[in-house]
Length: 175
Image 1 (cartoon, rainbow, N blue to C red):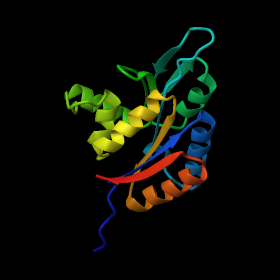
Image 2 (tube, rainbow, N blue to C red):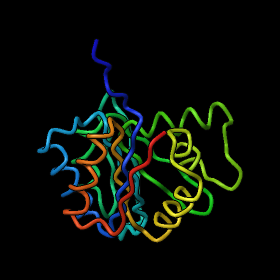
Image 3 (cartoon, rainbow, N blue to C red):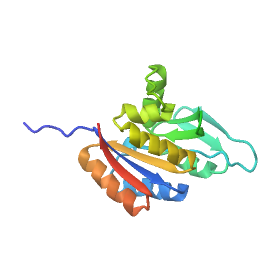
């Protein structure tokens, strides 16, 4: 009997612009990576109109601000969306299944020393603490994280796609 490959690998790509992160998400979808396995994290507080808001109505989330069109386009394809205020990082928007990992870490008080709520969510899915600290630093620097959680083969494919999509850093992690 053939054993099914486990979804215990993650690949994280760091992007220095929302356009590159969006291109990577589109390329991942075209390559057959299921959207339910994709997450994105970033911040957008540089709003000219000084109004940043969101709401969640059923499966849809709306967002106003400098990157409103960018985030709004992602809510239609990613599963789960949330806004978190993270001390030391600021306002973060998260789309995809990473939202539930962050909420579980918050609800379970599974905070890992020195990590933010987002960091604890990443750590809870098997990303090493030293890598989490690098990703938190990237978020502080207004970069975007794109995360794919799946089989080892999907993670390797996602890494290749993110590299082609001009990620400044990519890494595969196994839980």
